[in-house]
Amino acid sequence: MPVPSASSTITRPWPNMVATITAASLCPINGSSISGKHESAISAFSRPRSLRSIAILLVVLEHGTYFDFGRRPNRYDAQFFLNGVELFFVLSGFLIGRILIRQMQQSNQPATMLRHFWIRRWLRTLPLYFAALLANVWLVYAGWMVGNTDTISWRFLLFLQNFRWYFNGFFMESWSLAVEEWFYLLFPIGLLLLRKVFSFPKAFLMAAAGMLLFAVGYRWHISPLVTNAEQWDMLLRKLVLCRLDALMVGCLLAWAWENHAIWLTRFRWPLFVVGLLVYLSVLVIPGFPNSSYFRLAYLSVNAMAIGGMLPLFACLPAIGTWPQSIIGFISKISYSMYLVHAMVLGLMLHNPLLNTGHYWLNLLLYSTATIGIASITYRCIEKPVLQYRDKHFAA
View 1: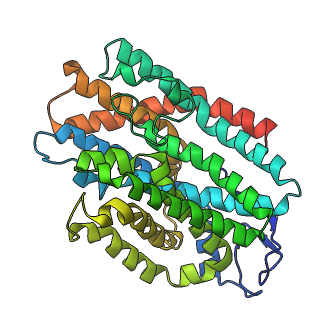
View 2: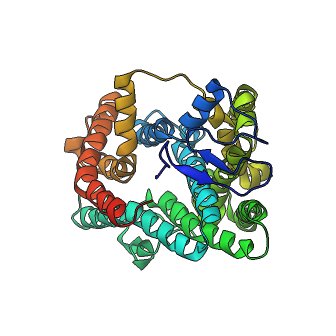
């Protein structure tokens, strides 16, 4: 996801803030300066490679628990701890929120700016998505991978496979991509419309809060259909209209960071501790999946807990050169890894020749193959398209 360079200059007309800032030193309040420690932290938070790397590794590990079904009575316990997709949602909302805050205020033609924004987003996400969709179709019809051919439809072309109802048995990892794509489309449109009536800060907060509350309301609407953990997963956790709230938490965090970064960094430890306790509270809160808490509030509260923990990561000390290189590499291929890992998993589970029968060896082979194939798809598909995008549609 594009992040402004450290030398870029940004103008913000909001009150009680300096008018001109740089991406390396965001958010002094009322003209106050930021200490070197806080300035370094703010700069670090604008480079989310570490968090993106953590998120994709958590996704790969979570889905790797499929190899352990013989000993694991319920795979949903992994979702509460290896919650990489939820971290992706909050991080994506944060990054896109900051882009929209900056660009929509600078532009005198917000509709033109949004068209440019969408072109850059779609060139980032669609080519590899459609390549993965075709690969999944071929693998299923060729018999290499289990899949429900009745589920394959035109809906996957428009990200409608899980818009308001669930799908099952084919290209299951695409559910979160549909949530992301609809967020890219709906939130900016809502922001643009509200901006015609309200000031930009009010429009941004109203759009984010409104979409968050709508997601909770849709979960309330559909929750009577949920009677077990699998239905909770398919109907509440994986529907577009139910999950926009996590991205809105990221957008609200972006607004807070643009306005009150110094306070977020100053209180990073209390925020982290509270966020961690809330995140782990699922261990002691009873009633999954039938209680009102898990049906209505849990997914939003969990996203808020993740958002509360993020400022601490901005203040962690720098690490050495070679760990940075590894983090940068994993971050760079993270989107490819997400689209590749489920195919690798499906091939190994369905083909005895690829399944060693040993959990840890399977996990090692699965992880290695995912990184290797993702590196190839990044070089052959993602990288050329991104180079074209950056040349013809510069940020």
